[in-house]
Length: 189
Image 1 (cartoon, rainbow, N blue to C red):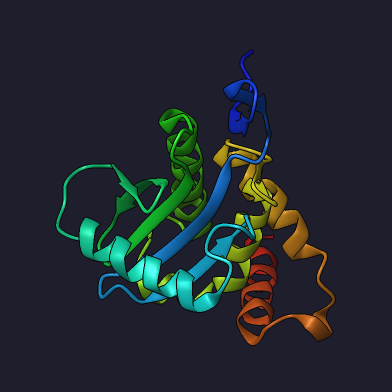
Image 2 (cartoon, rainbow, N blue to C red):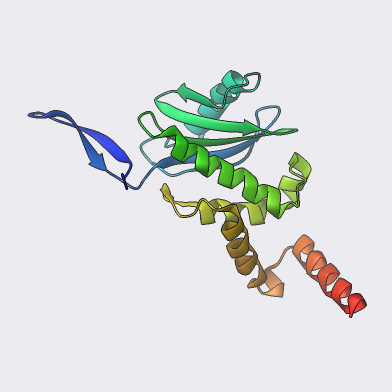
């Protein structure tokens, strides 16, 4: 298996490749107006401030919202993306990163959200379930390291983590969903 690599420059040797697991520079979901819904950046050297991140996202959206391609090179980053009814999903890696790896993370992100939201992937549903989607982000990638690329296992782990939340810390939507589930099962018995 070939590990992803990071290019480093040394005085004597010129350029050489160094293996690294920190593949993902960031993941982002934006609405069809280019507004950030959720974003996580993992490399402090790339887009370190919120101002720089939002400027990058604005530029990224302006280049991708009318395009039919799935990949773009922008500001030294390889960005793969997918659009839906009113959402855009982005995964960013360094310029030399393997696009297929980034695309597998993007597909995992989209398919996980699709499973979590029961195939109703639209802005309203994403905003209503933002906490669970944030958990999915964390299950897919941690600190730039890909943890999982299988949507079904991501959703299982998100469900397990979501079930462990004490009732006092759950949101109203989570409590209502739990009550609906219990009511449904009591009627079916």
